[in-house]
Length: 443
Image (cartoon, rainbow, N blue to C red; front, side):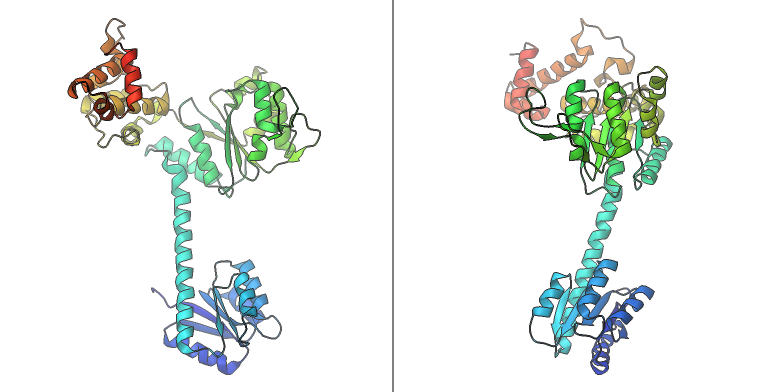
């Protein structure tokens, strides 16, 4: 090992303490000696150790009490307990409290060596696993927010700074920019990461259904309510609730959301009892909420409750240098093994204004991966609107459906009409191929 492991030997018998410490020092461990549990806690507070070896029966703070105190202060510090009584009662209690191992006196030198080595090895593995988990926790949430441009790096920096707090965040940005990815990153980098992340689109359902989904309902609260159902706030308890497109929420529901943020309780539909919740709220919208407040379409008090920390997600046209990286990522995601753009296609994608943002690029890559698997993309494969060509309804090859029909015809010809082989080459199921053949009148 890079440095000698530091061991704290806790034993009230001075002769045994010296002998055990001597054996460990011969193995090139650094050993500190104390005679009781209280002295051990003082020493542990003053300097770091990799392992504690302690007797169980000692005056004052005994080994079991010491173990409990260590577990509270440093759950990762391994502790080996020693007992002189030949029974396993003390050892069982110690193992239940989290001891790494136990030794029964009289202790043989080889047994001591093996037990200490094992405890240190397990401790090292736990530390390494924790380090790897922390690294993954640091990388995983943001690795899906791809880009090297200055705007995206500014966004990632804001996410990393805000995530560890419990502040409410309002995520703004155009449709298709990846606002939910930002919300998931904020959750995953927060202390709530092991708890639920629950998302709901506030624009996707009518007011009555949205109220029930958010706050839950009691059985019989309305027609069709055949059982009690917890709402999204309760489902997210301890974790994070992401309210997507909150700018489209009805004003009466906005008042109920405000109450949750202020009082941390929810009122299920049809219930007279409130339920306490511990939820971090993240909200997102593509709308100008400050303008909606002025127009009376959004509550000003809720706006300020949500806008504690504002984070803006840049549109793709403001970070065009990220397009090649995103293109390669999405094509591989949809099954392409060697995504390539010729210079002409690259120039088109880097100058296109991307009204649909990253979602539009993702859809394009999905289309290209199906229609032109493992082929270098040339300008003719791109939709006419990207090439600045006016679509001609009389020329099917100029539109998306014409491109798809062309690719299907080509695959069928290459495989002599074998539908299964053609479907495999297009990377689509055979029944989808048959459906599209009927759609385009192909036999």
